[in-house]
Each structure stands twice: as C-alpha cells, then as structure tokens.
Image (tube, rainbow, N blue to C red; front, top):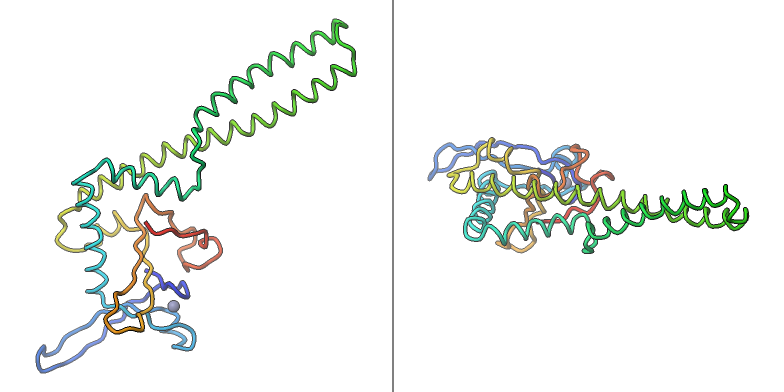
Length: 236
Ligand SMILES: [Zn+2]
C-alpha cells in the first residue's frame, strides 16, 4: 500500500484504546511512512483504518466478480481494452500489416537477387543497378524493423488475452470470499494507493486498487513515485 502524495509505503500502526462502551480495544491503522518518520511538514498522515481499507477492497473485488459472473464476455472485452489502452497500441489490424510486410519482404528478396544477377550478366549498367540496390535495401531494412514491431505487438496481444483470462478465473475463485485473506490479496492485488483524507467531513475516501494481470507491476517497489514507476499508472 502506497501514499498517493509522496509515494512511500504505508505502515501498520497499532494503537490501544479504552472506552466505557467498548472496554479495552485495539485499532489497526495504516499511515504514510514519511509522515510517521518526518511529521506533517513533509506529508499528511493518510491514515486509514485497516477495517475500512479491507472493506473497500473486498467490496471492489466482489463487484468485479459479480460483473464477471453476470456477463463474462463483456468484462473480458473491457479488461482487454484497458490493457490495449495501457500499451497505447494503435487500433490498426497489426496482423494484416504484418502479412503485408512479410510478403513485400519476400518480393524484395527476389528483386534484389535479380538485380545482382542482371548486373553480373551486364544487362544493367553499374550505376543504375547500384542506385536500385540502394533503394531496395533501404526499403528492406525499414520493413524488417516494422515487421519485428508487429510481431512483438501480436505476442503482446496474446499475452494480454492470457492475463485477462487468469484474472477472470481468479475473480471467480474469490467471488464469495467472506473476508480479505493474505492468500486472496496475493492472488489478486498488485498494489494499492491511498489518497489523503478529504477536507470535507464524510466525503468518500479515495483508494486506487491495482490488480494483478491487469495493471503493470511496479518496477521498483520501494516507492510509488520513483522515476521507473512514474509511467502513467492508469486506474482500472
Ligand atoms: Zn505520504
């Protein structure tokens, strides 16, 4: 769990209380580590009760599981779209473009060897054939790079499909979980970002949950805002 403002991890803070109504009791709260170490001049507490955050997370998981159970296919499409958007992938049909590139590359192979052959046989003047070869090899180089990109994108697309499938299966598995367990969290949650307590009393608390297989994991788990992590973290 991370602080939305300074990116530090939240730390567990247990306090003991006593009241007439409840007797002795314990409160588990999470607070920003920067605040805990350096005080409110550097970051605000971001304090959130364990009970509240667990409730929010469980509620979100249940809502997602419910949507999957009700209409699995549109949820699948929605998650695939989120992932495609994350990659900022062009919507063009990349396998079609890949096919085109591959067939043109095969053509170029033939053309280039023919040009060499004709030059050898003296059918083509030296300077003309040199210019042609230069042109064809430039095209070949460019297309090879493009085709490589399309291939990568296609592999990524297949990976996305597998990821979404895994996430959906796990959501189903936990759809009627009575409470948040360590196992459930490890299975489903990548990381959580807790926003500061809103100024307005009783205003809803903002918490972003990033799910496994849907959101990218943090490259450096020490702090949310490290440069490697600051690639746009989209909520999904
Ligand atoms: Zn903070």
